[in-house]
Amino acid sequence: MAENWLPLTEKEKACYKTVNKENLDFLMNRYNKVNRWVIADMIRRSAYHYPDKPALIYGDKTLTYAELERECNRTANALTALGVQKYDRVAILAHNTIHHVLTWLGCAKIGAIYLAINYLLRGKDISYCINHSESKVFIVEDALFDLVKDVMDDMPTVKTFIWSDQVAGQPPVSERFRNFDAWYGKYPDTEPADIILHIEDPCQMTYTSGTESLPKGVIISNQALMAQYMGAIVDGQYDEDDINLNALPIYHCAQRDVFLNPIFWVGGTNILMMPDIGQILKNIAAYKATMFFAPPTVWIGMLRHPEFAKQDLSSLKKAYYGASIMPLEILKEMMERLPGVKIYNYYGQTELAPYHTILKAKDALAKIGSAGLGGLNMETHLEDDDGKTIGKPETPGEICGKGAHALIMYFKEPEKTDEAMKGGWFHSGDIGVMDADRYITVVDRKKDMIKTGGENVPTREVEDAIYLDKRVQEVAVIGLPDPKWVEVVTAIVVLKPGETMTEQELIAHCRNELAAFKCPKKVFFVNALPKTPTGKILKREMRVSFKDK
Image (cartoon, rainbow, N blue to C red; front, side, top):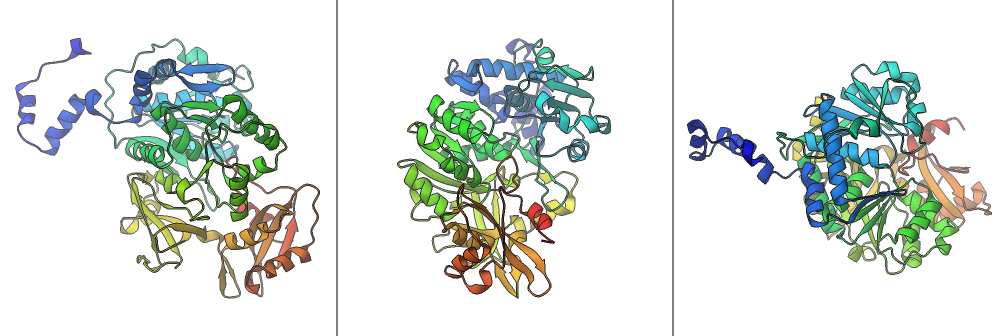
């Protein structure tokens, strides 16, 4: 406020005469509210441009940009009143709700670090994330309380538990919890005062899925996210007229940071919902959604769902996929059944905030199956096992990236952070090839590559071959231990309703498409593949469950 603006001292005036770090720090702090570029100011700026425009819709509740800014300020002031300070961690276990969005943006306004908990986890897995992160506040949704009820006494760092009732509508189960609305609603809707924020400050923490080991706490800065939002807006062609349907969990960085938040930045409208495939199709029609993101498994479910043919999807202009590899036959089907829709493929990692490369719609046919080029603010190359850059086209190597999107660190993991960042590049753990135009194609995860009889078999290649049989709805290919071959190629298959197939038929089909050593030696037919809430297929789980079959 101008009335609180203190005049410069003689010592402070001297800071304007020499350019050095100490003087620059003083200037950047004094004029922080004037020239900073941080997420804390994102909604306020959109509210300046579009005050009365719907920003967020959840069920029967709509918040305009002006209203959303006021509610975020209330949340920020309420967190401050709890004693939350800059860099403190605030955790939330919730679906896609207004409370969830307010928690994230309220944390950003006071420099706290927001931590969204994966609701696929339960019990000790959740308390591990809370304790490892040293979270001071934990917000728990009523519909998800059962996931933590047995570990409520095992989270000693948490000083305040808050109850969100926006899904089941249930009151707090005990006096340990404060009701979210009653807690934050009494605080002022003005912007928190005297909070100095810088672009390099951390603002978000995400635990990796931990499919191979204990999850790692990835700490991301304002810089990484702001650069990533800008890249998504430019590369993904978002604008203020977009209506974005958020059906995948916003606890996951893909939905939250490649779609939800960039749409807030440009002044579009975000719809929140649960990941129900039939309802997704209905909501695209009802809200006239212009864009939608989902991993391949969800797009497959949509294409197979009876509502696909019943609903008017003509408002959809842009379709996005990512999180895992899209089978080529499914991509071709999308293009046929969604004519005129621009299709984009995002590829990335949690550690890169998260998108790394993008295959833009203009290249969707010419480079079908590719993950594209590095994003607007990213660079990409491939490395061999000795850390040397691979320049020869179509030569497999580890996909590495550098740019403003990159993480600050894995919390409390110096060796793992250093290993991931060695040589000045972030190492993804994914194997890819680069064509003559430098477009990347993801071949496989390092850990998913099957080593059989001395040969390497990319699981994606086998899956793409199996999808050529139109009886197949979904497939996952894994390697299982074998005394002769070290690993055997194994296909776990879900057939379309009403279809039949034998193991011998599938293997014979593969022999027509693949070299003999790449063909499955084992086939299992199942009703469904195990997946995370974001649609990622859990191959690790299948490697365990099918090991002795």
